[in-house]
Image (cartoon, rainbow, N blue to C red; front, side, top):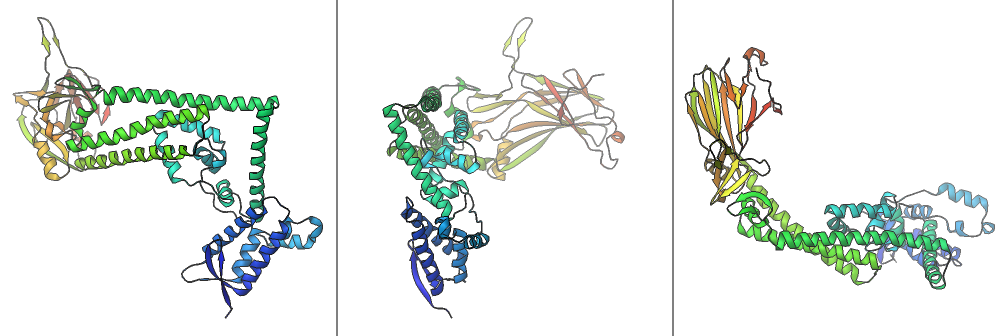
Length: 524
């Protein structure tokens, strides 16, 4: 049994075999000597120790609680021999070749971090650029397009909150997908030092006046940020106007004809959402999301136009993000609650009548808004074909389905269907649908509209007419003749069932669908 010691590596306690500990101590001493003349040597040593602690933690498990000599040997080979960083004259080439042959080119998994060194606001775009290996400017332009489409703001804020910032040298190496060795840590530290010097020189050059090329690059960069800032401001103004007009102004723009014309968002919400409380909650969620979006656009525009960098920026954007996320969560909860009201579908069939005639004539009955000596005005319109009349909702358009009859007579069935949060509620809503039609001899008179109570809400209420056509007979509707042909030509003789369908529109005209595809039949 080997002797073990307890050591603390960068704040984490480990049990390690004594000879492994001595090897580790020797390595760190040699590394300190190798880096003694390097700028930032202390930071490099701390990052290497942090990496050692991280790998040691990964090697432990419930069944393994002690770091062994082989573990330390593997770690040190992966990190690299300190002699590699000494002068070539101080190290025998044979030793260097031996070390190189043993070293494992271990790469850590690339991870997504926010790049604070190349950020304008939160470093999200620069971090995504590093992760996907593309220029950060391209990512910023893509985000700007998403923001114009209305979803980019929320995505950016969520990423700012969720994605961690690359703080340590190891984080920055992971962000770029580079191997974590002493050499890569050293190069990253030196690169950071060069960036600081470059930044200082840039400030000095701006003060003292410097070459034309740098000035041109600065102007180009400034032009891009100015355009982006103006874009954020412009879109923010558009959103603000929309907010004031459509939300606070209560503008009636939804094309559902009510008792007082078009509906507002609130009025439409009362037809869709389950209760008045849900309407109020959606208002709250929508206001949180919309207001935070408008403020975010103006803040981003200000930051880009005036190049403001403040410690409060992150808190402001983070606060707006929390407001936006709260609004989204509220809307999602209400959306799920409303979606439950579509969980069950129920339909009922009502027998209308039968006819022994060779041809059945269907006559759509429309509401004439105005009559004259030689004219009348029909109802037109397809988009959101609904009307509100007192306590009832009217819907327009009746689907007609044609199937074979089992005997020599026409049979007409009225099908009413709806949705609900239970089978009983869906069935009751189906029963509450009112649609008038009557069969007189060989003529079927069909209303193009049907209605149901407002309290039932909009729950996929539909009316269908099923026409069972006997073989050799036909249906005439809107100067069209519909027939199913012979059962012998309909496919399998044992299963001759097939159907055609169409729809009587709200204006009384008929669209025919052949084999579930829209196509007007050629008449004979």
